[in-house]
Length: 320
Length: 296
Image 1 (tube, chains in turn yellow, red):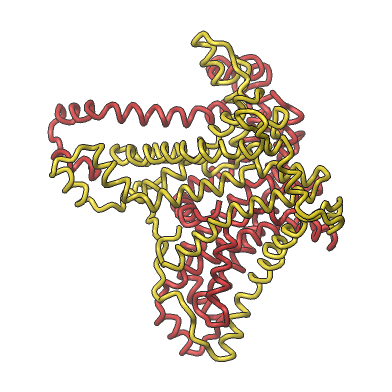
Image 2 (cartoon, each protein chain N blue to C red):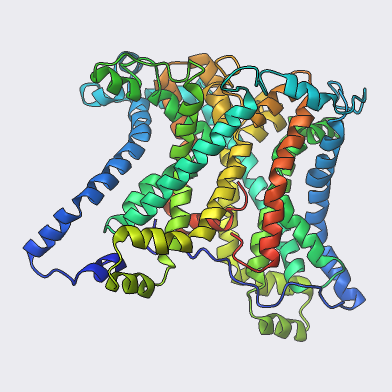
């Protein structure tokens, strides 16, 4: 990564976003002609399918995915009766929903903390770009490759797996990280944190460099310590980029699938399933209506983000 | 060159001993950073080393015994030829190239319409496009698969996956390009129109040449997105002979389970193109990622 990080801001619109003045008939026709191919593709392959899926969630459906056998809200009820999806009969609660909650809490906070720490620390050293490259590289590679990399790291054989080799060397006994239900979710989350921290770091580092030097120097002259500078100046000034990164990580968590599919296939048993995984399994194992219900839940979870994006855009703030 | 943190705390050290003192006073930061960087590198290095170790070594000892085993390219030739990764590599290319060019082209045209032409409901439509950026692909699986199956079995060809990736790449493309196009000087576009250039000529000869950085950022981002995708390929590529590398690896995994020399070589073949793209085009890549952070 170049030391000169790219600016966070998308170029600001020069004219106000608002109702365009009506053009001539020919002008309007030309505008529509340019937009039409993309809008037709979006309508046919994104908007209409979303409508179809929402409707399908109210049918039990069949292998042809047609609207047969209307069941009302039964799919949603079934889903929350399904112990693999939502189980509150014991403590701590389990199932895909609670696994996903673990993802939300642990994945997002670890990525943010590590990303912020790396952004603040790397700015102080000469080899900044080298360290940042090392942390960022996993961002470029596929979740499938990340999964293979971490399967080797977690191998239960202490002669092969790095983590168990270290434990063995320290006198402990090897652990099957991916083979037992109480460790599997954390193990996969760590692997994905490894892959995503680079993103948080790059965004926050770029924002950190945007803080005017004078402010920080003035605070130092006034006798502020490093911690106070971080806590009282940097953190508040980073609140917007932090919220942007958080939203991005949240969307990532809702959609997480590939890494789980490759590392554990949702196992052992069903103990590492998440919402997106349940959608896949239900849809292609004879419960298309229930799969559609899960997709609807995923869509509902992203609606606050949609509203946030639109309102940010309308207020002409930074929208990246 | 001193960073701003340094200039603020103390003046530039002149002598060697001053530098040494400063370096030591900062040593906790150095140690921490180097340790994190090492932890970050180890998993990848482990896989890289394993991919070059012969089967007998890889099955019996860890990657850290690299210096006591001879290294070989046999694993790579095995996965490429008998493992089918060579063919899958080509499939990944067939899938990725059109699935990058299509949203790039359609997105640029639509963005031009949103930025520089006027038509009814223009801004409302654009806000809907902004909203579509975060729609999960899961909401489209079933209807798209049904549509592809019932209309010429598009899922047994590459058309299905091209269309699916195009559709889900378009909102980001339109959003990025529109925000870039709108910053171009208005005079330039008006002047071209005054000279009698058609809308298409303005788009093709004025807007596109000035927007290469934005176009490149999106192209790289979408290329990696499609190349790295597993989920959509699992669902929309039904013909086993057309599956990309990501899907192929999941099959190798069920065949070879703990034979990491094979999996490692396959994994590195999958990673090769993204790594080359990353090192060659870092700046565009990071820009695209920063700008695209509204999408996952």
